[in-house]
Image (cartoon, rainbow, N blue to C red; front, side):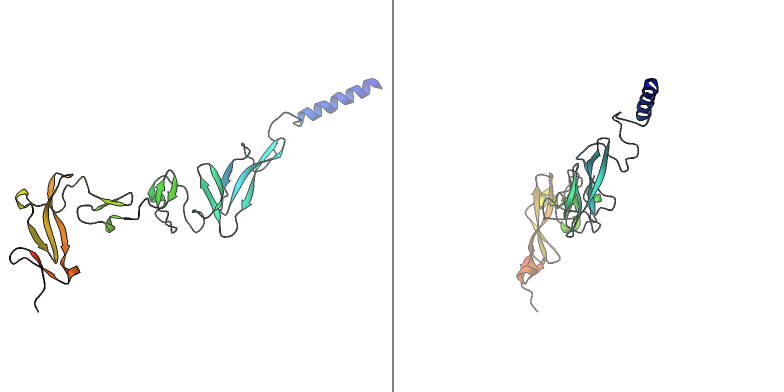
Length: 209
C-alpha cells in the first residue's frame, strides 16, 4: 500500500512539472503579452494608450486606457498617455522630419527632437512669407540665401544711387555679409500716397492729375 502511494505521488509530481509548474516562463496562454512592466504605447486606434501590467506571476499583458474629454493618445519619447498635443483628428505627434508634421491642423508643423511642435518663430512659415535679400524661411525666420548672393545686384559704382521699381524706391547698398551690392527696397511710395518718379533723381513725388 505504501509503495502504491509513493508511486502515485511521484506520478503527480511528474504531471505537475510537465504542465509547466513553476518554471518561471511566461504563461503560453497569456494573450496580448508584453515584456517590461510599466512600459506604455499608443493603442492601435490612437484613442487610448496601453500599459504593460502584471496579470499573474507568469503573465504580463497590455491593458488599454481609453482617453476621454476629446483627448487622444500623445507619445513623447517612450511615454504614452492621454492629451491634446497631437493625436486624433489626423494630427501627427511623433516625427523624423518636418514633412511628417506638415498636414497638422493644430499649429504643430515643425519637427523638434522627434515631436511635432509649433515653429520656433512666427516670422514666417514658408518662403512665400519672405522677400528682398532674405527670401528663405528657415526655422521661422527670413534669412538670405547663401547660395545665390545678392538677388537684385547692382554695380559697386552705383552704391548710394536710387532707382524706381514700380512705385518702390530702391537704393544700391553694400551687403557685406554676401560680399556684393544689391538694390534694396528703401521706400514704398504708395504708403505716403505718392508715386516713384525717375525722370531726374529717382524719388517719391505727389502725382499731378
